[in-house]
Every structure is written in C-alpha cells, then in structure tokens.
Length: 336
Image 1 (tube, rainbow, N blue to C red):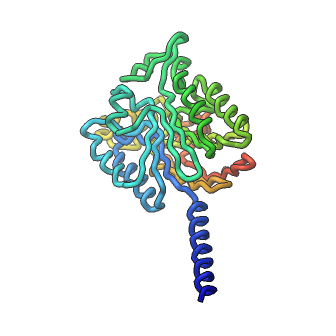
Image 2 (spheres, rainbow, N blue to C red):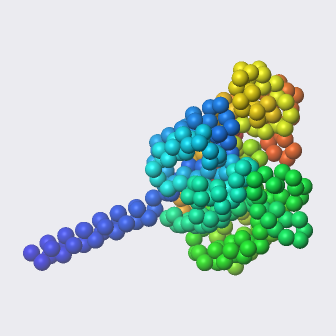
Image 3 (tube, rainbow, N blue to C red):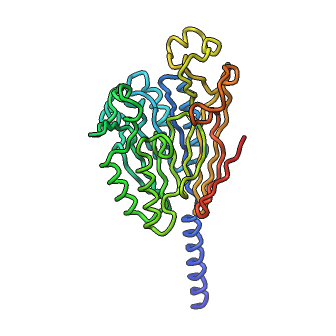
C-alpha cells in the first residue's frame, strides 16, 4: 500500500513539475502599433478596430502603441472606446503629435499613463518605455508642450533628458532580465542624443556579462527597417495609416473633396489601403515578428516620381516579418 501511495506522489510531483516547466517556457506575445493618427484619418475607427481585433484574436499578453495615437477631444472618445475593447494590459508611448494640443501632464492624465517614462516586467523580459519628446537649446532641457517643438530647430528636438538617462541607468542595473525598449523617436537614427542612449544600453550589456538589452522598437518616421548596432537590434515600426511626404500628393485622386477638406494632412501624405501593425512573440532564445502588408492608395510613390526612400528612411507600405536570435544577435528580415 505504501509503495502505491509513494508511486502516486512521485507521479503527481512529476506532473506538477512538467506543468510548471511548460508554463514558464510559454512564449510571451504582444501586439505593437505606431503612428495611428486615428483622429486625423477618415477611416481612423476602422484602423484602431483592426489592431484591437488582431490583439484579441492572437490572445496577446499586452498591446502597446508607440505614439501619435489619438486626441483627447470629444470626437476621439469613440476611438478610445474601440481601443478599450482589448481588455488586457495596454501601454502607451508619448509621441510628438500627442503634444500638439496638450502638455505631457494633460495627455498622461487623459489616458491614465503612469509617467512619461516607465518600465514593467512580463515573464522573462523587462520592458522600458522612453520619452524622446524633449527640447535642448544648449543650456537647458524642456518638454514638448502644445506644439512648442515646431518652433525649434531640428537639432534642438528629440532628446532624452539627463534625469531620464540617470533613471535608465539605474533601471537597467536593477534587473537581470532581458530588456526591450520602446520609444517614439528612434534611438538609432533620429534622437539627437541617441548616441548617449546607445552608450547606456551598451554599457549595461558590458557590465551584465551577457546581452541584457536585446531590442529597441521605435516609430515616428512612418517607415520600416531592422538594423543591428553593437549587438543590439533596432526596429522601426511603420505607421498604421500613412507615409508623410511633406508636399502635395495628388490626394484629390485619392479622396473626395469633402474628405480632403476635413482631413488636411491627407494633402501631404500617401495613405495605406489597410492598417499596419505587428505581433511579436518572445521565446527564451529568439524573437519572432509577424508584420502586415498594405498597398499605397494611388497615386503611389512611383506615380508621383518619388524614390525608394524619404531622407534615410525606406518608403514602404509594410512591416516586414523578422526573426532575431537572442544569443547570436543576428536577425533575418524577410521580404514580402
């Protein structure tokens, strides 16, 4: 009898061990979207809905948007209601256009964001949200607020301030998990003190003795690329809605006059025919990014005689699939 009881106990312990092991090994999954500009798009509701539907369908662990989201006005309340149809955890990154009509304090309070920069843990990963919406005039730093950044020269914009850099150093030192960063402006190419931020990340890896910081996501430039700098992968998440060209794009052939008059940014942009977003799956040894593909609503960049890029940023209507090996630091970027 005792041997039977002992065998049962051993069996149950083994079973519990397997369940525990399988639970800890379960990949973490999240949905990511950037630059929805939903309040400024004629089909903003449909674009937000598509992202939320994908997050629910994929049963992700959380949903994050990388800035330039929606406004706080009454017109945008229906958009926020759609966003909240995803009942899981949702995270926000501040974008520059989120601060066109508001201060940071107003926007943070309006969407229940804990701070302009913050971090959180999920599974085996530590996630860090940065705020690059700061001005520096060579003497002092100040926050973007109510479009003040539009009056500043480009080399005075998009800084991570010293207070935040010091916080980042301490936050990285306090965790033993692999780290993934989110920012609106890209650390690798757009932030004016991106080299300082990258030095913090690279020093964290050096002092940890392993690749602690593995990946940084950004938006802002309405483009898509994957690159590696000193062992850290940087991925630009394309806008969910359009590419900004900055000059007339024959939008009268794209939309009726009433739509163009109501949504003025359409004049200087080229819309994607469907929303872009990505589903990111994190395992212990690799990251899989499943992107989405759209077409440009004609007239296309080719019709307008545009090249393959705007400045240094690829002119594309996709978020490409990618695989990142967390140990080797290499990535495979799959073309559509």
